[in-house]
Image 1: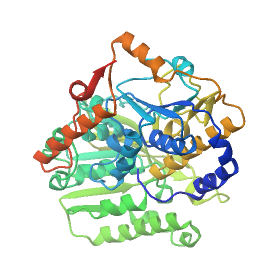
Image 2: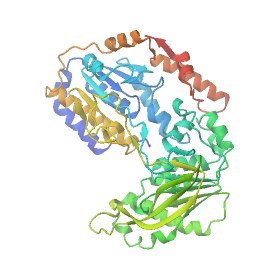
Image 3: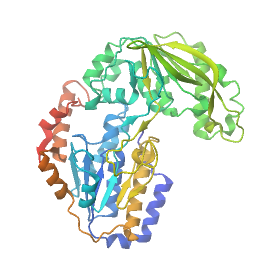
Image 4: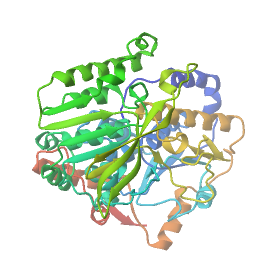
Length: 477
């Protein structure tokens, strides 16, 4: 995911539209708002509502003791510039109208019904915490790892610290052509000395230092015109020292003729892919190799206990002339091939969990609607599915906040009804003896992590154990 200071035109239009009812905003009573999830969607919703409903209070609930969600646990450690959005989120979390309650889970510590009794407005922003499976034989073999868990492992996500990954292997396959696949490949191939300067966890750093990975294949089911990774991510991996990137030039035989008609971002990326195919034929041999492969889908992973190979079916594009090349679908052929490998990462997308049975899902993997129930809204990947970057998440979150104010203006939300807010939820948590983390508690954890990082010449050394986090920043309700 990537951050940006630019606001899309559709978001700007929301600001323009707000002028039409600014006088109405000033007449809103104070409403109680809760946001479930403290990732980008949660903080951007909060930021916008603080401007639109200046006399209201907003409580942010987070299942982990620490905030920032995907920015902390999803953004690659060598992408420090993307994490700069945390500075903005910190200002939001420090606002006197905002309360942070960490280490509490919707569906476990309280139910949606409890939130409906406590708040005028509920915004669900808890993201996509599960990965989509291939559903093929051998997917449960050892060393078949969801990319999401590998990313959580090196980023310090507590429940991913014990994933059974064996890096004492030479050949790795990554299935998926998105930025996540590129991230996984880059971390596996990058110099450990470069990673030492980041906030990667010390445990994963030591394991990566002993890695024997030499060859990584990023494999996708469609062609070079349909890849989902961005040019910035691809350009970055091309610059890795001692890594040769190899792409089959035959895949581009008929590409040059359609390049002028492609949208500019797709055209630039395709040109870079094409240039890489030619360079890979002349580049001197390197110790490590990265293959970008197309038109292949896994049909079976082989092995007894651990994976030792994958059977692939060769695909081809359907002969459709009335749609954009980017949207063309594939169909399987009768051709198959077998590729030996000892480690496989699955990176074909994420899905959201239905943490409370009262939350309706209009799509199989995410909610699919901004307005979920009366007074209940969604934003971010839980709302739209796992697509886009931080900029698009910001746009979506701002839209949700705007629509909430529209609903108040139109009387769909009753802003005249006083709701108890956190005081109601606090009684439930206190009855359970729940330990929570407030914003000061997070600042205590943050201070310790930064101090430990200085000792190792790193930006921070993340605490990966929830119990230790609670010892430093927790408090009994």
